[in-house]
Image (tube, rainbow, N blue to C red; front, side, top):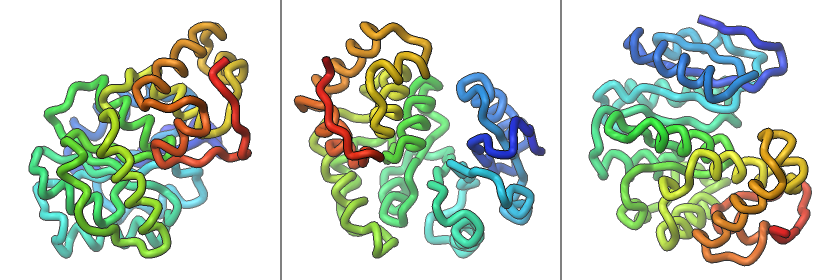
Length: 239
């Protein structure tokens, strides 16, 4: 089903054969990501319906499959062929650390399990949208091995290694995750305040909290610490 907001609206695709789970996720995201477009489908066979849309994330139900199953690999191949730049997140009913580890090594950007609280899932979602990697398990358990994609192997490994020695993504509040997403785009405090409908003081407070949690001194270090890149190369302090 398509929920058209605008042709150029950022889009999330939800692929899950469970109708209730799929539509519940969409309803939740419609509330959290106002102005975004959503396409939900039963399988990757319907991916062509979203061609031409500005797809920012594809969430795929693991559906009890192993990460190395031929069926899942076929799904990931179909996604990569049509939306090569879109990050993929897996939705899983298991908290198995080995599955999460394998998924990250394959280049999956988010691993969401049904056991995590809604607010943590939303914070993780926003961080994936901002270019990071989310997994609810302790990250130092997931740092062995290399990623599947050669071109981004070193960068992805640095992301995992950096996060393994710092706060879990779950340590950031949903609002801090919002601010992080804007920091990734190189936005100033004033611009962030306008986009998120916050006061300048509140934005400054969030940035300071983020820097303290990451043990860094400025915005550029925040972005580098999480493996992000500022889009305009601008460096500024929290003041």
